[in-house]
Length: 142
Image (cartoon, rainbow, N blue to C red):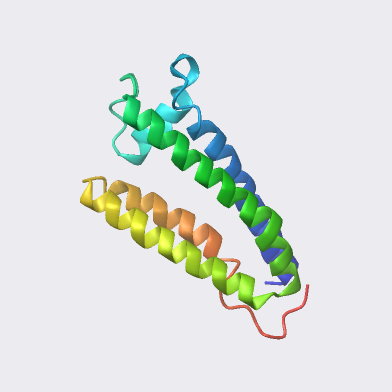
């Protein structure tokens, strides 16, 4: 896979993460937070609490997490994608490390909280980011 193909793939992932963060960020707005409630209920499979209102802590923590995911989306799209096009190994390696730290902390916490289904979703998100970043040939060109 060329560096440009990898960068384009990661840009699509970045856009998906951005949209996801906007929908998740609706959690505190009770009047129109159904997308956030769906995301939260789907992450804690099976879907069985969609009609339940979100409590204050869930809304607050969702706003924080959605903001962080939005920041990751911008980081990927505006910093990592251009670095990937250039084959900038330090940025690529730092991104892999950062994503692994997120994955371990988030997944361990999810399992400790009894929401192991979230680990499945985390694994999908991690794969989407890592696929374009791993196994790059040192002589790869854009």
